[in-house]
Image (cartoon, rainbow, N blue to C red):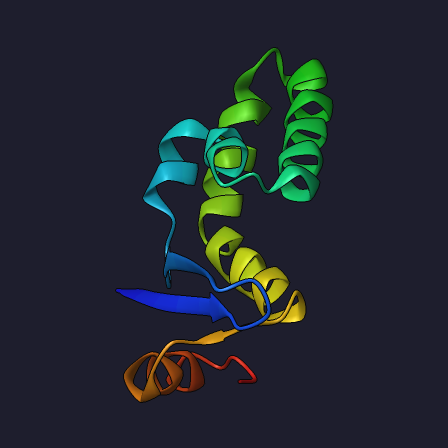
Length: 102
């Protein structure tokens, strides 16, 4: 399920997925790069590298699987903190039902 968020100051609109992140599941930190979400890109990458060292690479996949459950929530919360708001009442309802403070 996707919602549209708009920043009224810059008129920038972003369509974001709510829920499980399949792209993070399959590609780890790569979705954060394409979203220009540098903070979470560096955090996920650092944790994947740290987890990979003692597990000979296996930890890299495990971290991606774990982050896939909550990366979209982290990304949406960061956008809301930056001044983005739901584009309409439908988007606001979806976010409210999923536990976001909008």
